[in-house]
Length: 459
Ligand code: ZN
Image (cartoon, rainbow, N blue to C red):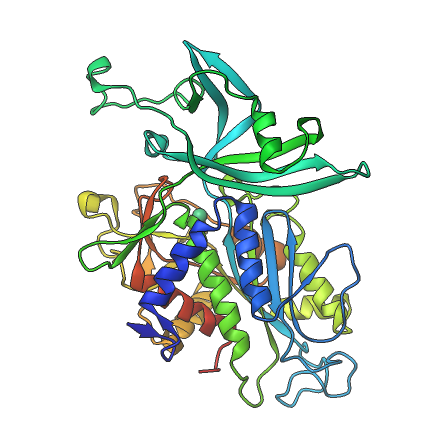
């Protein structure tokens, strides 16, 4: 099956997702994966420490495990100087705000087990590593899996400065072994896992190096030069097409790398298509945030100044001032993407009966009247229009009224920017498990819908 006038096919989207997941075991690696796709598509990396070029173009910048990419190619050179180079719909430059943004947001982090600062210890002859659960993981899903290690290491460089190295070891180094049923007959009725006591992975019986020594070897420095780390575990079993007709993709970190991948693909697709005559200059932009699973409150999470700062800098490079930023926000639309719960066949009663979400049934609009999701009717209309333009069906999710609703970065992004915001996702089972399930056709529909949202009217 294909969508978006044939540009997004089920096979290429599903296989692209499998490959993206493989190269993205940590948020830092997800950023690197998207960055390399974007650079290949002609995006120029910008450093936040530098002055940014005033020429319109395709740009990308990163802040740790977060990435923002955009294209100002469709914007005329000096849209804010009153020379008529602004909106091409007859407005003189700046009369109704000369540019606006179309934004797709997502997150790069996923629940996992992260290595503590002093992880090494031994118990009854086993060498164990101390870990701290990150985010709301389904602890049981991490048992009896072959775990590798990845992340970022802060090292002392030869000149005394602090440098960063990424590392990823896709080998079965670690395992959190489950207790045999003979030693706890109640397990199938009431499994209890203590995060401190029961989740420590073992990695050797004897003579294990100190973790810092092992890590130093991975990034080719002396142990004394390893200053700190963001190191985490991942299941080394690769993602795969599954199901009788291979209609699913099973794998780790679908929440939310399926969205991060679709967003990256959609931006690349959007910038390749010609703009229609007379289009108001819309700047397509994607923002992939770290730290969503732990509340987004950090220097690079969705609650940070990352997105507002970049809006301001883009407007500034185009010659606009602060007022132009606020005017741009007034006609910007943000789509905040995070995976959605598909209706589970074994637990159908946990879902709102009039709003079942079908796997491979298309992108999901997320609605909550108490605004755990940011969607309102105007935002919803923009997303529905994108799905219609891409030729994909759209589903609507609401949680049962007697269950609490999860949340996303949508409401905080709406509050920080003042832009119309809509929350959406793609159908998923087993969310926050070490191995989640999505639909193969959904992935293609997702990419096509996001491309139409980022650059409406170009099909
Ligand atoms: Zn998520």
